[in-house]
Image (cartoon, rainbow, N blue to C red; front, side, top):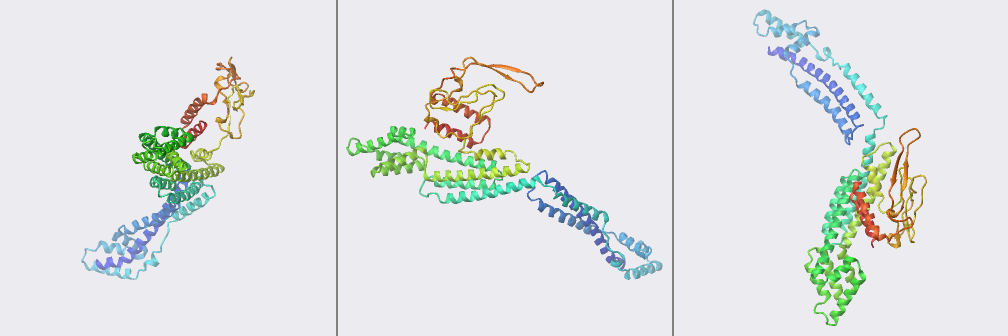
Length: 507
């Protein structure tokens, strides 16, 4: 029996190899189908590493199928049946069935089977055969896969645009980190700013679209503003606690002339022995009581400058401390502004590329446009069928400036940003003061469609020739603008623009 099993061993190996080859081809077909499915899915979703998955599927599937086929056991009877099909005329099967028989006839039959098996050539008698259906299936999948490259893949274009944006953001992150290392080590805010800029650089490297990059910049700028507010608040408190309340009020109001007079007056009183405590010593006391390191440092610098007779340097140090500003913070703000400009430009380029190809990324174009419009302005007006005045501009006389009647229901569009601050005008147009008798408004659709609606607009608060000083209506304009920004869910930097704009009007 052992001799018979040993004689069947070459046939068993050949049979195992043939089965493994067949299963490998089936696995190759399965891998080709998986690749085709991945290719189709890549048209609907983003697969950054889809090419790698192609190779994984086309290699792992045949190996998996072939490995399973090689490891599965093969019975002796199956091997004997295959050998008999190659011309042994049931000798091998009979020998296996008579394995427990000790009769002379059984011994003769086994010897005859062994002689036939010893002359059996498995390679010649059992050539390898590849399943035709698997070959045809693989060729069809390969043809479909190749044809798919004739169709533009929108997701690949999106990923390419994101990759370009990410490359630009990595470049900006390197510049931010480089700028952080150059901050003045002698200033108290430097360590906090370096950590802040380091976190910002990390967020920029992870950004693949303007929304995430601009959000990271918003967070960084809010932290900078908070640092500035903390320094300013602590400076003013320390000055008041040190008995310099009047100087603190002048600095808080931005009245540099009054602050300079107070410093000069305090110096003269100290020199003439009219004051038991000099202003410089009061500043030193304020520096010691300040909890914010930057405020303490700048107050100390002001005290030293004042004691040495350098009034201008003392005033500059106090002004910077009251504003919460420092050279390190200014440099950090400049780095953030540089990164914001680059993110806006790269985002606009990304949006333009995708729109050119008929594609879009949710929120991409709007975020890019918002970031890119910082510091610029253009006026535009619109009307939805209202027969009313087109719009009012800014006036330097006692008449309503910019008021023009409109007959077609549309407001004129402004193409240039105003070049002068509102504070330079004597008065500003107030739309609530227009009209005394009301007006009739008709709105209708095309001929034969829709209904005619009529509404009466109530009278205004004054005459059309009326205008008021801008500071009387500025709070109303500011509240309306803030409410509009909040309702539009604009990002933080857009709200900051509104705050800075109306703050500049009061300067």
